[in-house]
Image 1 (spheres, helix red, strand yellow):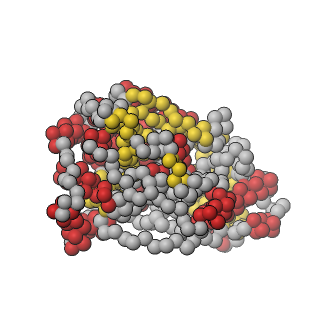
Image 2 (cartoon, rainbow, N blue to C red; image 1 turned 120 degrees about the horizontal axis):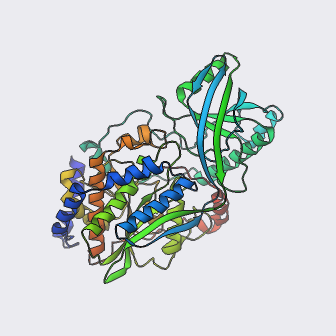
Image 3 (cartoon, one colour; image 1 turned 135 degrees about the vertical axis):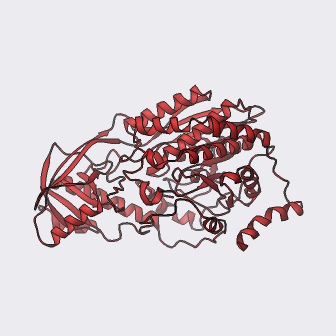
Length: 542
């Protein structure tokens, strides 16, 4: 407990030295927010409709547009103003409605598998023999020319992910322990990166497109990929490209580990493995835009200054997007509902952003931030030049994000903003009794607060109990409402409503840390960085 004691003692010490003033907290308003959030919550109605009725919300799909329309209508029904759908260029959409895989030989058996996004469906039922090939470069493709027609392929690749598998394979504790929170609250000095991940991502994108083009030309039937989760859990994301000019390839399927292992063993015995596959999927190319849902509670005397909360509305396609990330959108909408139910009159404008395209690289929030608040000089989504402020850069105060499942809030990741620490701790204090106690200067990444933090604006992500997120639901067919708990969502929405209120009412804008600087080699490496960024599919997550 020593390290935690030292960390928490810094605020009283600074107060004693006169370095900071005690951050005021309106406890009367906190009482009202708690009463509305804990006793008259609508958060479960919101998340139930979003997941059970609308369903999965892959960016660019018809169901995502339905979710955009419904969330905007709901926020306006609760009294939020200036609502609209904010477009940005995305590419082609995709959806699927049916998938069935059966092994025909050496014996008959159903195979648990679901399609990867942005891969085409089959033309009715197709049958083919499973063949294993090894491809680590575009040169490796030449040896298979003329040999792949009618085949269902297992494509072996070495080091497909240069970062390795960072996801835990087994169950994790459903709640953070005191020891976990103590460890989180201790800052770790970051290590220097030596791996050029941008270039690695571009190589993988180029190889993916080359494979897709060859399989399409060779008239292969499908590809099989092993799920990264065991016990019949299918962890599925994108297998093809959303870019209109890229090849569509062939049907891609993610197969349950246990069924994939059966196929592998049969191939090792040199048995003929034949599968029957039918997938109904389609590309949506009539509108290349995707949309963020935006609405706000206008401010009063400081109405030009902006306080924001957001989370991503998009999901992957095999579950219903409950923990990733419908829970956050329901919580954010509920926080706004609470404030409107209390008829608050904020000084600053409180704005809600429900983002699209997060799963493809924070696309929606990056586009919105670039348009309104600023961007980094250079080209591509990973430009690293100096900050180029946008029209509302100076008017922006703070952004709060939720995106690590549905677990209750345990604190806030401080993103190395030391001036923010006493403020966040003061705002958390009325919620210690419901488990939110920890503020750390550590960074966390992989989600939409980075779009703000990356240009020097205060953007924060809440620390959440992991629950079943990384072990079961993240990007899997188990991402469904059953893995959310009502009490956790109520707690999160109530805390967020209080944070938004206090951020909107404080005398000064939220403090900023130093503006990010370009790397030393930015000028000389600018062209290299531009080329590496084009066409990247961002590795995701938290």
